[in-house]
Every structure is written in structure tokens, then in C-alpha cells.
Length: 97
Image (cartoon, rainbow, N blue to C red; front, side, top):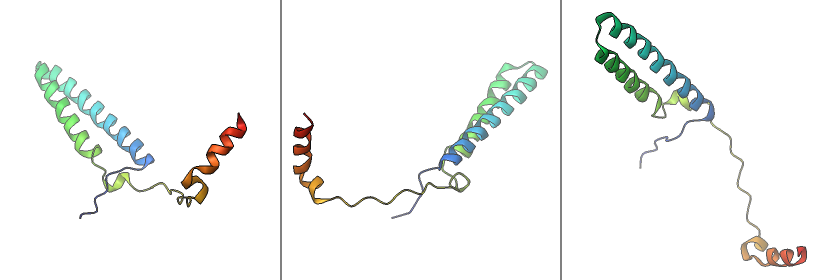
């Protein structure tokens, strides 16, 4: 089985969000200017769609640049016998009432 990463770290998510906003804004501005110059609104839409596709390719997959600072999770606590059987929890609930 392949070991393919399917996650981004927290900072990578922020980096991807900023990058997508910059790309879409840049393509939108260029498309608007180009569409105004040639008087074709359809060209503005095509350039904006190209920017959205580029931003999607660069930011949706979890590329290695988005996984540089993974979270260090704590080790799982071993489950004790009393919580596994559920016996002590019931008596402590009765005492609280």
C-alpha cells in the first residue's frame, strides 16, 4: 500500500489560503484590465477561470511545502481496568447525586 500524505499542517493551510487569494486576485485584476482593453468581458471570465484552476492545482493537494511543521501529538494514555469495565464510573455518579 502506498504511503500518501493526505493532510496539511496548520501553517500550511494558512499559506495555501493566502496563495490562493493572491493568485485569484492577480488573475482577476489582469483579466479585468485585459477585458477592458479589448472590450471583451468573456476574456475577463476566461482569465479568471484560469486563475482559479491554477490556484486549485497549487493549493488543494497537500504538497510538501504545506507539511513542513506537523503537529506533535501526545501519546495515548493507557486505558485502566476501572474505565474499561465501567464499574467505578457508575458508583461515582451515584455518590454525586
